[in-house]
Length: 154
Image 1 (cartoon, rainbow, N blue to C red):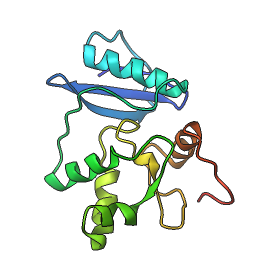
Image 2: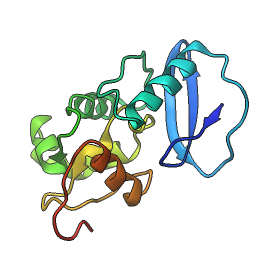
Image 3: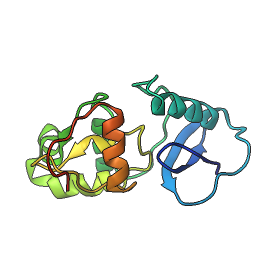
């Protein structure tokens, strides 16, 4: 599992069966040459995203998880660059407003951060809440995408 550097910290990448299966921020040090074509493509696309040259990712992803988690993650993937939604709106869009906590738990288990952009999901009051990569990274990713924050974020 290669670890690459980014402006937001080091990122661990993993592929399975020709698909990106994991992208997580890590404190581990960068290592090794990337030989896997899927991971090489992921690295290149992430570099373009971090420099403002890319707004959409184009790579095969392979997701484990439950049917419900995959349904949530695929809905998250539809949130456009530079836009946000809330956990409540996402649960409503999935047809079950009462499932807000289950939606939040599924988002918290997202195995492919940034590319499945759970950083674009805010609390109902617009606050930054729950990001596996840390709230500072969530804020930085949203700012990279042009989200203007006013007042308190937490």
